[in-house]
Amino acid sequence: MKILVLENDLKELALIQSALPSDRYTLFNITSVEQAWAPVQSGEVRFLIANWDTSDIKQKQFVPRIRAVALSSPVYILITSEKPMDDDLTSLQVDDVLSRPFKAQDLKNRVKMAERILSLAGNLAVVRDQLEAQALFEPLTGFMNQNAFLRQSTGEMERARRASQPVSLITLDIDNFKTINDTFGPATGDDVLRVVSQSIREKSRPYDCIGHWAGGDEFVILVTGVIGADAEKIADRIIAGVRGTRVEVQNEAPLSVKISAGIASASHINTSTDIDLMVDKSQQAVARAKEAGGNQVFLIYI
Image 1 (cartoon, rainbow, N blue to C red):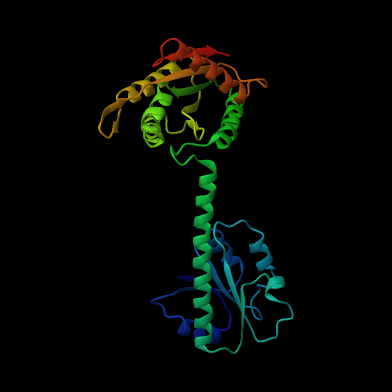
Image 2 (cartoon, rainbow, N blue to C red):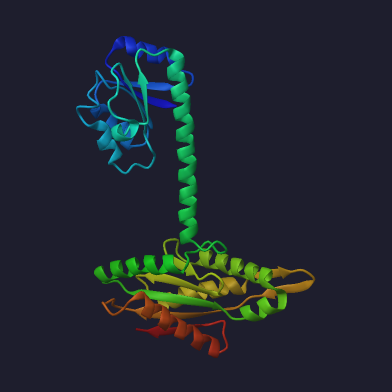
C-alpha cells in the first residue's frame, strides 16, 4: 500500500518508517501539501499521514481543498498532533486523529483500520458502477435500455446537427418472434433475442448507438454520417447474419430466425428532427417491410 507522509520532523518520520515495514507499505515523504496534489488527484496514492502541528496542511487548507475535488477514489487522511483537537473529525474533514507521542503499534492499528475502510470503499464503488451499468443496459441483450438509448441518441443527433451530418435510424423487428415465443416458450424466445443481439453486435459499427426495449423484439440502431443506401447495407448485413443463424430447441429441428428492418434517413438535422420522430418513422418503415413479406429492408427519407 502506498502512503504519503507529510512530516518535517525527522524523529517523527523515523518512527513512522519503523512502524510501517517496507515489505508491506511504500512510504513517500513530502514536506508540503503542494507535493501531495499530483499523486492524490491521479489516484496513485489514497492514504495521507500528516503532521497537523508542523506541516502546512492547516494553513494551506489542504483538507477542504481535496474534499472539494471530485476524485475517482476516496483519500484517507490521518493527522497526528500533540495538541488537543478543538474540532471533531467531521468539522476537520479528516478520517482519523492520532495523538503524539504515539507508539508504533498505535500507528499500525490505525493504518490497518484505514486499509479496511479503503477496501470497503473500493468494493462499494464497484457495486455502484455495476448498479449504474444495470440502470443503463438491458441485461438480456447487453444493449442500452429505452431511456438510456433515447438520452444517448438525442446527444448524438445534436452533434450531427452541429456538424451538418446525415443520420439514419434502423429499427429491426424479428418476423416470427411471437410464434416462436408462443410455441416454444419464453426461454427459447430469450435465446432468439441473444442470437439476434450477437448478430447485430457483429455486423454494426462498434461506436453505433444500439438499444433494445425490455420485453420486446425490436432493436434500434442510430447511425450517424450514414444515409439511404449506405444505411440499407448495414441493415442487409444484419439480416443476412441473423438468417445464417440457428437456435437449438430440444427434441425439435433448429429454429430459423428472420428479421425485418425499417430505416428512417435524414440528410439534415434541424430542430424539428428529434429522436422520437426518427423512431416513429423507422417503425412505420419496418411495418412496411413486414407487410411485403418480411426478411427485408424498407427505407423512408425524412
